[in-house]
Image (cartoon, rainbow, N blue to C red; front, side):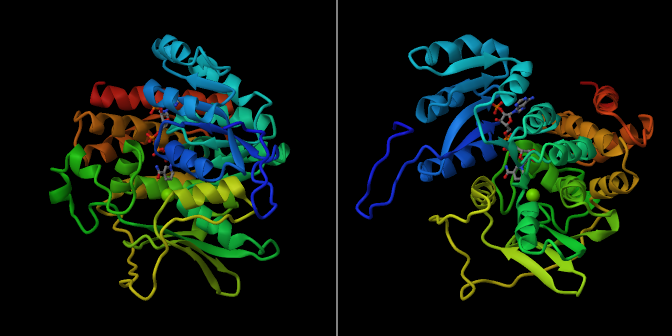
Length: 402
Ligand code: NDP
Ligand code: MG
């Protein structure tokens, strides 16, 4: 499809225009990335792809590039460079490789919005580069805000670059806040599905393996966030993400378990009124909302049907059993580099668990010991965040001997 072709359908409306939003899709080979491409494919008159990036999945990256014809692709794994380069040699697509290329691509003046769908700490640097250039961010990569939320949000304000959440809970809160700029938030309520082990106790969790943890009841996501959902670390990271996105005090953030995942989160205002955003669990909706903001655009996604539905239930999270959430809450309250340390240790612990090196409950142990071991810094610079991340990773890796 030629991106600038204009066609006049029967209604006389322009089907394609050159005003389409140019999307730089970072992490295009992942769960968020592939769903974002489905949204783009369904809306060829509104979006086009400027940049695609993948880490190791060169086959999918090549397929995506041939289909969506971006100006640039980045393959982080340098060993795959020649394969990608060869496969795209008959096209005008430029190929870059290596970690630094993510930042180089993010600095290019060829896109309007970065969809930040890389997993983990690796998403931070390219997102900062995009903000430096004043680009809008559709933020799925919550770790960026967990690690250095103060610096990231300050940069966004300085550059007047909007940060629009993609994480479903934060998208829900963002949507509830539309039209409420003059009104104060009393608190927000983040909903949690509870994950595959809702109601289970340590005597069960001690035997849990990778295959069990990767079965999420409501959402189909990448491996790391699926494990984070099973340990409730995901909700802990989301509390910290919410603090920075919505400028909240820790006491204003509450978590409630809602196993059906129909209410995606809620805001309670100063008058006690509560707004909720609801719908079937489908990440394409918050992805589409972030990309099209401030417009809502029609789609064919399945709808929630009140006439058929079962009950919506709520209960408090069991943070005595799922201690990762308690550790994340501690990091949320204490601030400084503690969330960065928590995140780094968690990334290593999840890596170790996914490779069957440690058990489910050992992940908490690794994180806790790392949080106790790495020196606390109350107001870190970006450099200090990077150092804390590296120190925490090394320490956590030494515990599990990887
Ligand atoms: P996936 O594991 O499915 O995808 C991760 C993407 O990042 C892939 O494109 C992968 O490349 C790339 N990647 C992995 N490591 C690196 C690295 N070191 N440097 C650069 N790129 C890398 O993850 P998800 O799509 O599930 O999650 C992405 C982010 O979105 C996470 O932060 C997650 O918390 C957040 N999120 C995800 C949701 C979901 O439904 N999936 C919901 C809400 C938030 P490759 O595959 O080629 O190796
Ligand atoms: Mg979420």
